[in-house]
Amino acid sequence: MERNTCMILALDVTDREEALKIAEDVWEFVDAIKVGYPLVLATGLDIIRELAEFAPIIADFKVADIPNTNRLICDQVFEAGADAIIVQGFTGRDSLDACIEIASEYRKDVFVVSEMSHPGGAEFLQPAAEAIAKIALEAGAFGLVAPATRPERVKKIRKIIGDKLTIISPGVGAQGGKASDVIAAGADWVIVGRSIYKAESPKEAACEIAEEIRAELCGE
Ligand code: NUP
Image 1: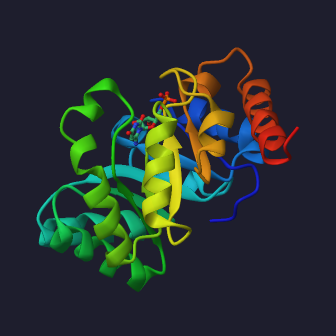
Image 2: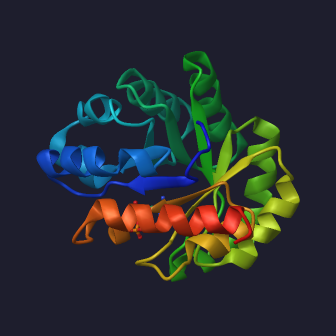
């Protein structure tokens, strides 16, 4: 995945036409589009190929099963045209290995959730986050998902993984995080959903956040 705008659109709308219209409006401001259960359950898996016309697709299915089931899920997702998949790390090394094995067969990427961005993410996942980051590193994941709502945690995770893994960070805008803060803390990409797709002008909203990130990276 190329790093240009350092922004990923979380496209959690449930209408096919709306999804395609937003993708068409904002593709130049994002490096990837993340699709998850809301859009795929509402419109079907084919939406992945349709959206892939605009940007690389990250499938956010937070895969969290036994190795064999993980393998079957990842196979379907990569066959459908996704460029990367988000999986949970708390299921353990063998489950994670199964995802990474299939991803490498397809030459695709795996992102591992280390800690979630909502308040409840601090309850059970946060105490395990550093151990999850370590197994993701050992297993050969492409990156981690770490919370934009807690930039100090992104900083800590970055220290553990160095520059060997990428970090994508959700929680900007609607959940209270600030794009420039989390980029400064060491995230490679921020993930933004509602602040863009619910804006009166998704294009202007995306442009504004992209500009905020650019200014941070240029030290302006
Ligand atoms: O920890 C996580 N937090 C989170 O918000 C892991 C995620 N994958 N997400 C996803 O990022 C969430 O499911 C949604 O698709 C997106 C954030 O959207 P928004 O809060 O910007 O609307």
